[in-house]
Image 1 (tube, rainbow, N blue to C red):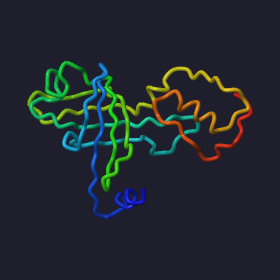
Image 2 (cartoon, rainbow, N blue to C red):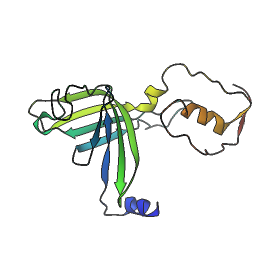
Image 3 (cartoon, one colour):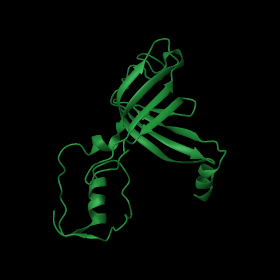
Length: 172
């Protein structure tokens, strides 16, 4: 872990990206640094986050699409659609990779003669926690129990601890 953090903090560093794009059909396409032309993440928190608000970052990823690889009928996309796909990326330094982001594709733009396809979407947390929240906990409950209950409704790993996780919430 120290090597990874030191590598990220170094004035000169080589960062790598890898990941996977899971298409709506369930087919998974591996992504390497050679596939990724650019990535931007806008967290949209310029003036702070209101209590009770959920952060959902917007992601814009440009993929190399030589020969129309990411267009319908292309080598990578084949007969699948990009809209609704889930993208998971990892950032690497010093040969060690850590999760960077995950998002659901809501838009895809490409041209037949273009060397790239731009896909964008929002952090998957917004989609995975959409709809009314059904709280099945018995109260009083600790903050850690509540957080684990919420995160358990997504595909994210459950945290083993949170700041002030022992704080007790007396009722729903």
